[in-house]
Length: 355
Image 1: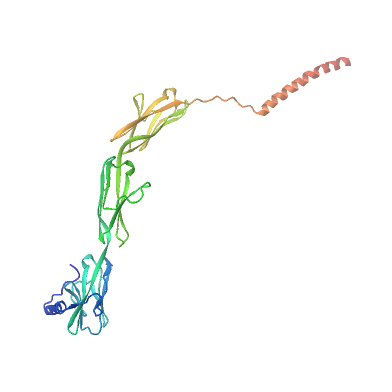
Image 2 (image 1 turned 120 degrees about the horizontal axis):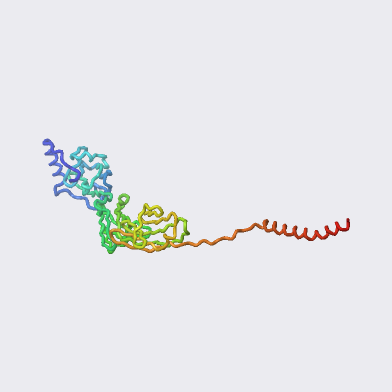
């Protein structure tokens, strides 16, 4: 029901009836658009849900009686209130204007309102239509979904509002461009892992800010190994073999050598696993450790493997480097010894001549 509801007190029943007869009998002449006579009401009134609507009617001093009606329900007659709704109040009742206010407007208040006046025993009316706008609201949306790669999905987003809101879908992704759908439903055929992530539904009708909700889509796929690199390590050094794999759900890793599974907890070897990475760590590499190793990554959708080699890295012997000063010192010593041998004959000759 809209605004209205009579105060049906027995002593006022006849008064209500008289107003109905006064304003609703066929003898009443409605005012047509462009009619210069009065009463003159406003153009259509548009308000948002929860706001107040003011309905005005222009009159003059020829008016003897005046009333506002909602359909066939009398809201106000002169200064007297005839409806039960506390939201309806009289704003102005003068010789030039007769106006009421409907507070906290709701959608059921929408519809035609009539200003009716009595002049020279001839009732005349003027009608205004109240339009209530409602902010968009998403009332139904798909739940988060987990689905295998290659399957088809359908996402739903139902919204209400006045005017009817526009619903759009888009993929929240660095590679996504523009809207994926301008409809309540989003269909994806043969979904790929690149299409996983959040999908945003937006409902807008220019009455208020758009309403946004998100759905998370998880795309499951078997593992694939993205990196498995062979490594060279010298004997006695620490070495690491690394295996990276992408998968949803996350992959479980296993290491093998010559069909023998390697497990953590050994003295010289450790297996370290993370969601997308596994490491086989050697703390003190020996000749026995060199060879081919197999990394196996698996989840409930499949498995894959890669071969990785731990090989010996040779070291090159370095000749000790001698400082130039040491070489110079040796050469100087040799020169001094040569000088002493040359002076010896002269010393012997000097001694013989003396004696």
